[in-house]
Image 1: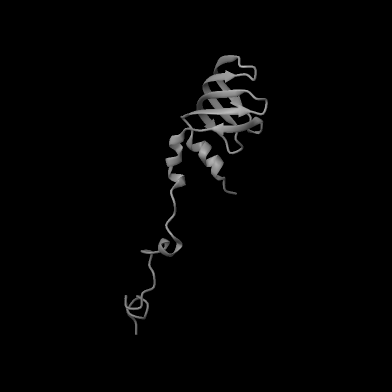
Image 2: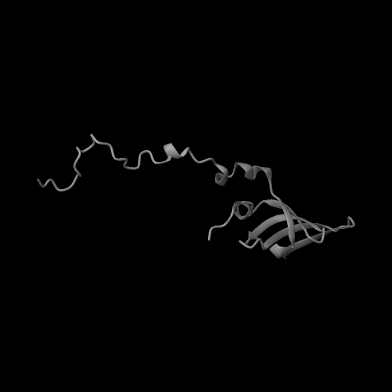
Length: 114
C-alpha cells in the first residue's frame, strides 16, 4: 500500500514549525519532530492555545493522529519535489531504448551468427 499526498506532505514538514488543531479545539504550534503514517505526531517547543484563549508552553508532546482536525504547514513546502509535475506521457519514455528500425539493422544485436 502506498501513502497518500497528505502523509507525504507531513513527512516533508519534519523539522519545520507546524500548527495543528485538535478535535477539542486546542491549537498546538511547534517544531515537528516525527510524523507517522497514521498521522501520529511528535512536537517540540510547543505553544498551546486552549479554546478559551489561555496560552501555555510545553517542551515536548506526542499527539494521536485520530484526534487532529487539521494541520497548517509552512508555505515553503509548496515547492517540495513531490509536487513537481511529470512530463507528458508521450515524452516520458524517450531515451530508454526505443525500437528504431535503422539502429543496428532489423535484426537483433546478438553474437553475429548468420
